[in-house]
Image 1: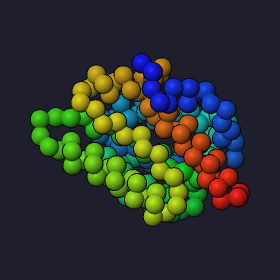
Image 2 (image 1 turned 120 degrees about the vertical axis):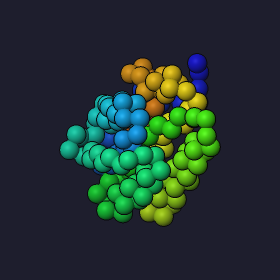
Image 3 (image 1 turned 60 degrees about the vertical axis):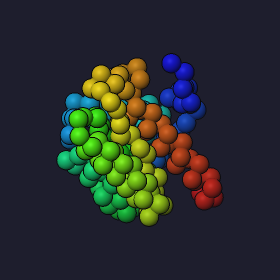
Length: 160
């Protein structure tokens, strides 16, 4: 499948000197941990040192915005990568959690001026989630590379 971000992972991005926070939801742990591994791989393969990545876990996707905002406010990171997995079920729970996670993460970024990358899977089935956290197509890695690109852009915009 060809998508708008094809080639993103291999982009000419330099992450050396950048600091990142990763906030992860423990709900759907195996999926989110695979996203986290992909994010770390994406960062380190572009020059970010392991010591410049900090990871924090929260119970679920609903809690990601408050943790992302708190981490952004510390001044220790140039961007935050939020990772979670919300899988549609038989109740409207999916809409409430995924919608609040998305809007809350956007508000965290706007409130702090620190980029918050949206790496929360919002899928219909477990199989779809597993496809998106595989080594060959990992949305955590994609979110990390996008975060590095945004940090670069913000530094240019801000003149630094």
